[in-house]
Every structure is written in structure tokens, then in C-alpha cells.
Image (tube, rainbow, N blue to C red; front, side, top):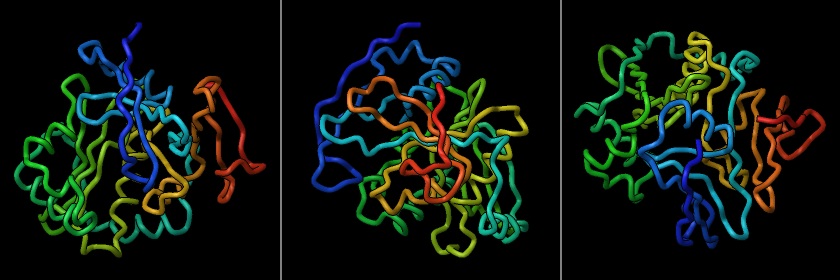
Length: 253
């Protein structure tokens, strides 16, 4: 299927101060479906609401798409401890919507972790449009402690993959590492459903808030080339090789 693409105007980058950003976007969103999105994810795209995009910046190549080959993944010691700490949570997967309870937790998370950011001021409808997509199957993982909602992970479901859309949680439960735990559970769900990958969006090495993505190994990164052509998924198997060490290998994807 051929899709029409367009470029956004340049604007200030949300992640790297002093840099300009722009995106390549799918114009004819009415033609999107889970199968086409699966193919776009393999080409380094991502969605926000109904919009599908990928970075297409003039002078910056810092955004690396990241995915986990779920059958190969092995949790490290810290991740195993995270799973053990959260054994008392009640987990439930369900079709995604946005309830008032989830929205309150979302605002609490934004205030606690991203105070002053634009997302902290999002209305219920704006938040719903950001998390869901009219053309895709979105599932929600709820985590409860003694009946109280403490974390929610919105997840896209495609024929060959899952994609982590957004996770939010009670910011005072730092010791539980609920963001890490959500990814571990999404990996487990992908294995149960026979998927190949869990996509984690973009990883920017210079952005400390994104460093957690590189800790799930093995993982694969797709580096944007100078002319955005001949890109490959590169497997990273050991810590410290994400910059191109000897434990990496390239593959078509």
C-alpha cells in the first residue's frame, strides 16, 4: 500500500535544548490499520493519537527507534528484583479507554514527574486522543495495589508486534520501578500472544530520561542515516554496545 507523506515545519526540539526538530508524517490517516502500522514501525515510525510520524530533522540524527526481540530477551538482576518487588500487584489487560480514575492518575504522574510540562495541562479529551487511535487495537494494562490503581500502560497491538504507547503511575512509588515493570509485563504479553517485537519508541543517548530503554537486552536500534536511506536494525546484546560496539550486528527489518 502506498501512503502519502508530508513534512512538518521546523520547531524547537522537546528533548534537546537549542535544536530544531521536524517530522515526516502520514497524511492519509484514514488508510491506516494494524497491518500497515506494523510495517511502518519496522521503518522507524511511531504514533501519537491517530497521527503516525518519524523524526526527519535537517541537522540532527539523535533519535534511534528501539525494539525488543521478545523471545531473545533475558531480564538482568535489577529487572528480576523489580518483578519480585511487584508480585503483590494485581494485573489486568483490557481494551483501552480512558476512565476518570485513569485520568486522575495521569495528571498526578505528570505533576510529579513532568511538572510544568504541557501534558500536565491536558484536558480529559486531549489525553484520550493522545493515548488512543481510532484505526488501531489499543490494550491497557492496569496495575492495582489493594484495589487502588497505581499504574496504567497503554499498548498498541499489531499482527507481529506490540508497541508501548505510554505508561503512567503513582510518582511516590519510586522504589517499585513501575515503568520498568510495565515494560517487563508488555514483553511477557507479547510472548503470550506470539509477537516478535515490543517497540519502545525513540531513544536519544543524550537524554537521561530515556536511558532506561537501553537497559532491556538484547534490543535493536534503528539509527537514522545521513540521507535517511539504507537504514538497518542493529542488534545490541551487551551493555555499553549501543554506540556501535563489537556485540552489535545489523539486519534488515
